[in-house]
Image 1 (spheres, rainbow, N blue to C red):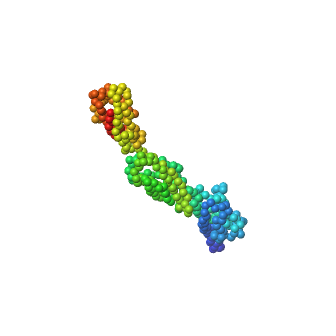
Image 2: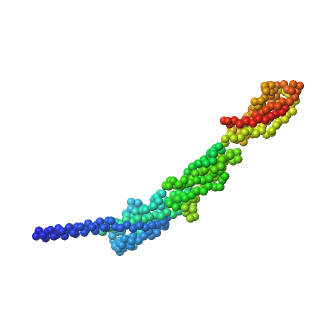
Image 3: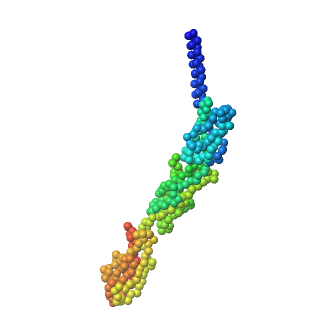
Length: 339
């Protein structure tokens, strides 16, 4: 009697062990993996789950084969008649996976009565559906003409919502005389364009330079994005004032009234701002006697009679005039004037 009870317990133990083994086999069913391109049309076939997992498609409907998803509008659905996985709506890879290099989506499918859970991986492949975009359409740089060749100016990178080979692969700079382009690869942060000055700037030759930077992705043909670069050349005081004439010769009557304008000299400076603003004065070699006879308007350059002009005392005067700019380190030019 006791032996029969032990046998029954052993028998029940075997049956329980078998049931547990079958249960775990059902839950840990094998995975399958499919690949589709993003943006495919609704209804596109992803794969035949029933066939690939060896499921009996004749039982799928009765066993309520379905996808488990927390999304109210899932990306995929399975047909209970044939066990084929379909796309429910267009998939934007950049929306579901952002900048990930690989976009894998885990799809959970369930069979009821008895319970079976199957996990299917769907890799969404990128297509080249985005163009590179710069954070700004125009970049303005201010560079002094005193900056030496070799100076580097880092620019903001162009971004492309696509990934991998379809992201930004290269930059091109429009042909110009002063700058070349270097590209620094910062891995996950992308490729950074850098302007390198290769020839000194001259504001008097060109006060600004207009460049075009183009970003290209790896598509065939590639998509591109563009940014205008406007370089404003800042002035340094590297030009001296230049008189309109080398020598000014003027005939002046003796006893000319005080206040008479003898001549108006003129000098120009190619620099800008204070560096190009000219003012006038008598040269350092002018003797004190001349200061009693003539005056000069520092703004206009007019030489004006200040005292009595007497031919019998002196029939000719030579005066040196200075033209200076108002730069922090002023530059000066001197010219002789004959009366």
